[in-house]
Length: 136
Ligand SMILES: [Zn+2]
Ligand SMILES: [Zn+2]
Image 1 (tube, helix red, strand yellow):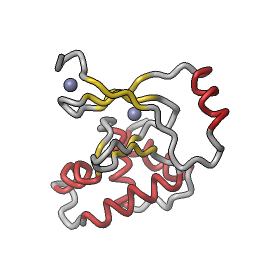
Image 2 (cartoon, rainbow, N blue to C red):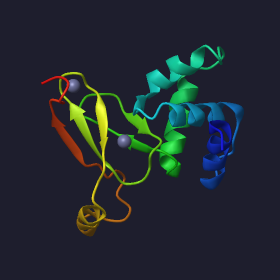
Image 3 (cartoon, rainbow, N blue to C red):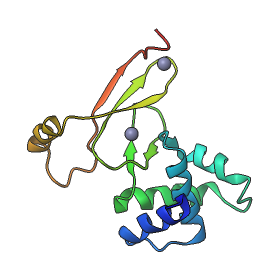
Image 4 (cartoon, helix red, strand yellow):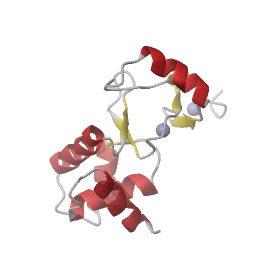
């Protein structure tokens, strides 16, 4: 399945009306699975959609987040980042290059976390911080 149809499918699954702009934003997140900020999505889509506004991007990403179609990652004072991978995984944040790496989580470890976190937790993040191999 190409990313366009993947994007439409995800939106439908989360009962989000697949407007042209929403599909484009979801497609961007699938093609750039690098924990994008709203600004990065905006910059990335601007050339193909010159009428796009930052507010639209911001609202669309928050709609996705609130519907569960993307996960959100909030690191300290950094702007929120959006992740098209919604399966449980942890993150490693490099204090030097500010890159975020996905870290696979043992299912059992995740279950242990789940035991002490209510089902309706707004955010569930496991974050490691430090200096990545490239920067150290
Ligand atoms: Zn680094
Ligand atoms: Zn991630």
